[in-house]
Length: 184
Image (cartoon, rainbow, N blue to C red; front, side):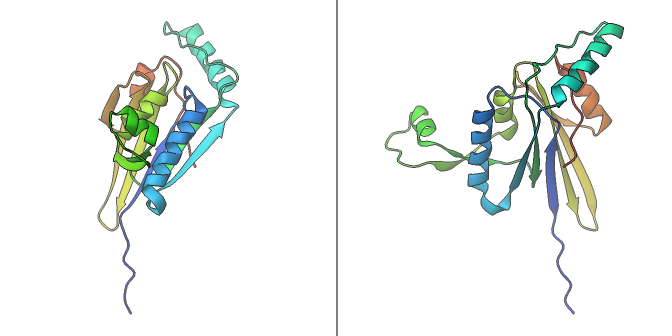
């Protein structure tokens, strides 16, 4: 009897975070999905109730510590990312984007290399911080994990030792209280 080959597997996930424009963010995710086809499964989770909980926590922390967290808008929708795979390296660039890059005679979108973390930074709400964790399993060999802190300022600290150090480092960088990494 032949043995089934067990392949290397990766998962990427994030905490909940606010974005500047939900529609633009979702379009960006669709461009990544389109460029990666069936090789990458991306799930975006929304949470409309987290803002109140985080604001309560921020108010308590602000009252007992000398750190002053900002309060989030109450109608905020929080998003988190779950990817069955590693951090994406490509996405579709639109004709408008390609022409904007100075390229001429472009008639259709095409796949382009990206820096996922840097592009995510551009979608984050001002002062927001996202925690991105990638976990990989090499069957019968090892498990690896990398963490990244992305802020709306474009600062990406990577890799960060996981798990507690990632959360603590992000809390120090963020202007808002940071939600923990989600479970999907």
